[in-house]
Length: 245
Image 1 (cartoon, one colour):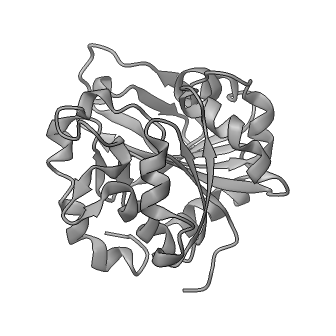
Image 2: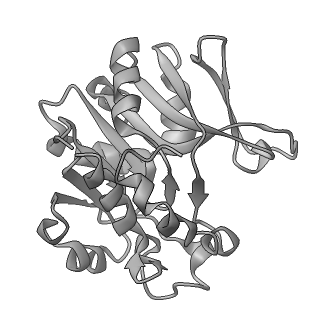
């Protein structure tokens, strides 16, 4: 597959406190899945769809991640690093990486602790066609209250973000894969900032769209979900041809 003209930002700086019982001495992104660290599966997913220009936003135990992946050449990609000296949150880490994103009209962002079976080309195409400031991949779950939900109108434009609640109704949730226009960076202040809680709600005056996905979604943030991660290895053949189920 031809190289896709975009950069992918992987957020791999989290403390991973909920997974500490499983991987006590490694960053969450390096939690093993089979014989590979979890985030390597994301790198391979991107590469298999022609996306080879990657930026890892590191923080907690950053040396381990940089030692594992180096410049990316062993996996056939190019990897740069933006390292935070103290926790900045998902939004703060993107803001810190701004110098690596100069000259881009848009870029991909992925949480480093979840996997979504998705066609990155189609997500980017939708984003550009709609002239959105942000496009968020979403999946339907039986219990949206556990995650917080994304509310859309009939045209899939996001109208509200709801925090985690005790309501266990089905709904759409943020799956941790985004396309951002470069103008998003103007809406992110320096310092500790959450994309989900601080940035996304303030973007709703501009076009923010949800792109519904039907592929496998796995969040390894808890030990119970981490046990499902080997399913990703079973998807590897399909991932090479575009990650559609």
